[in-house]
Image (cartoon, rainbow, N blue to C red; front, side):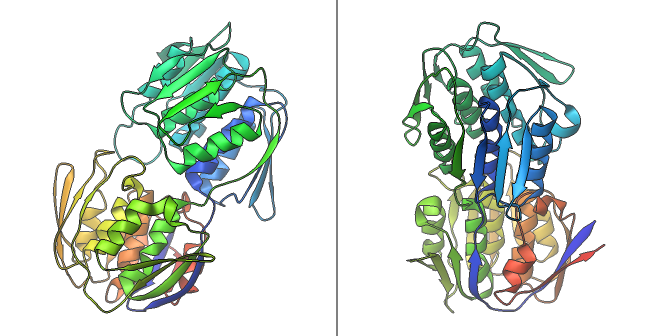
Length: 421
C-alpha cells in the first residue's frame, strides 16, 4: 500500500486540468449494454473505479478497449453472454448496480449482487428496485443478490421517487429507453451526470426530454445504436481543487471548469471571502490575505451543496474565524474524517448529522488515515495548510476518484509525494 506525504506551508499558484467525471463515466459505461453497436466515451478519467467497471462489463460479455492513454474508452456488447454480476466484482463499487436496468431492458433478465463501495451509510437500493417493478419487473432478493426478470419486456410507467436518488434515476432512465410505451420519472435527480447520461442515450437513439427538470419523459424505442460521447467535467474534482489555493493562499486556474457545475459551492466560497472568477479556459480561485469567514453549509441534492464536497469544506472551515456548521442531509455516517482532522489540531464537535467547526486553528502535520474517497482528499487539503509533515495512509480510496493528485498539486508548488508504506 502507498501513502501520500504532504509538507505544508507553500502557497499554490498555477493551473490544474480537471478530468472527466468519475460518477458520469461509471454511469455511461453500463449504457453500452443497451446496444449491440459500440459506444465510445471520450474525456474518460483514469481511475481504479473505471477499471473495476471495465472488469464487470467484460464479465458480462462486453469488449472494452482503453485508448489514448485511457482517456478514450471503446465499449462493445454485441451480446450479453453472462447475466450475473458477481459479488467479487460488485462489492468493490456501488455503481455496479447500474448494470441491472440495462440488462433487464435488453434481455429481460439479470442477477446482480447487492453493491459495496465507501462505508458512508446504508444507501439502500430500494428505489432502484421499485422503479423497475413499476415498469413490470419481477424482483426477488436471495442470498445477497437481486434476481430480476421481465419475460415480456419492460413497460412504460409513471413513477415518482419518494426521495431524490441519483443512482436510481440513472438505472430507471437507462431501463426505460427500451421499455414499451412512455415512462415518466418524477422527483428525479437533476445532477449534471443525469443530464450527461440523457445526452449520451439520445445520441444512441433514445427519446428523452426533461432530464434537467426533475421530471423526465422517455418514449421507449425498439433498439439503440452506437454513438460517441464526451464525458462531462468532474464537478467534484473541480470543487476539490478549488479549495487548494484557499487552504494555502495563492491563485489557481481550474481548466475545463464552469460555474454552472459548482454553483452552490462557489457561492459558499465567495461568502467565506474567496474570489471565484470565470476565465476563457475555466475558473480561477484566489484567496488574498483577508481571514476566511465561517459558514453554515447544508448538503442537498443538486443544485444544492454537494455531499461529495462536504469533507473538503470541513477541512477549509478549520481555517475560518468563528463557528461554522455543516449539516449532512444526504448520507448518515459521513463525518468519519472529523477524528482524523482532529488529530491535526482541528476543533470539531459532531452531533448526529451536524458538525460544528471552530476556527481558525493552526493545523499540525500528523499521521492520518483515509476512511473513504472524499475523506482522503480532505486530509491532503488539510496537509497543504498544516505546519510540518502529514502522512495520509490507505490512499487506495483516493485512487478511486482522483487521478494524478501528486502531479497536479506539485505543478502548482505543493510539496507532496507518494511513497510505498
